[in-house]
Image (cartoon, rainbow over all chains, first blue to last red; front, side, top):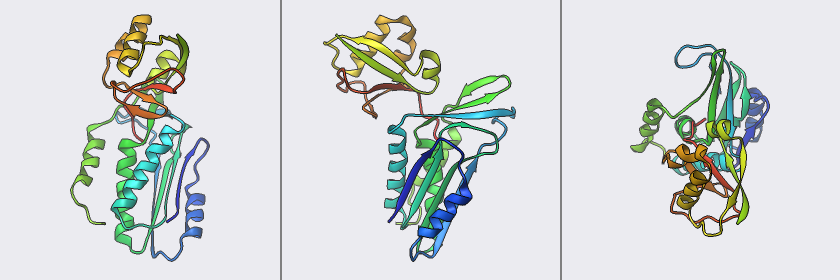
Length: 158
Length: 84
């Protein structure tokens, strides 16, 4: 089972990452991938000029590893990749790319869904939204925590 | 006494800078004691050191306030994670 977890301080290219992932998938029948993009507006509807992801080198990577470990324990998946931006991001740019390979598609879809819910809650970043009127650090939301609770019941997979 | 770096992330780094140098007395044994010492040494830190939502990391691992700490370890204070 191959796993790639990487922080990307520069541009994230989901197409290249998917191509690289597919080139190494060995014998699996299903690949599911997801790309998260920076929305150009805040939740309050204000136009954003950028998003800054602060991270703690070493500690942040370990949070991603732990999330991947949990997905691997829970779902019958083979290869996995998580690429996550850090630093300054412009509106519309990719922030995160995940891909999962499995023998069958159900586990791949569920694992990718699970990875994203976990990344949204537990990935070791501090996000700052920048707009014309100033900057604002994001605190965890109730919706993110509700998404995490989805997985506390048995949810298919293993 | 030992000169110790304390590092900050997120909004705390905006407030205090990425790192500060702190004269850490030899009798500081736990994170709770370190929080007190930082507050007493500089009133700017009082609010965040009293804030339970601000957590300490020692050598890159989030720890509780009763955890042991000594000079020379990597010590950080972090606000709640935003997630990815």
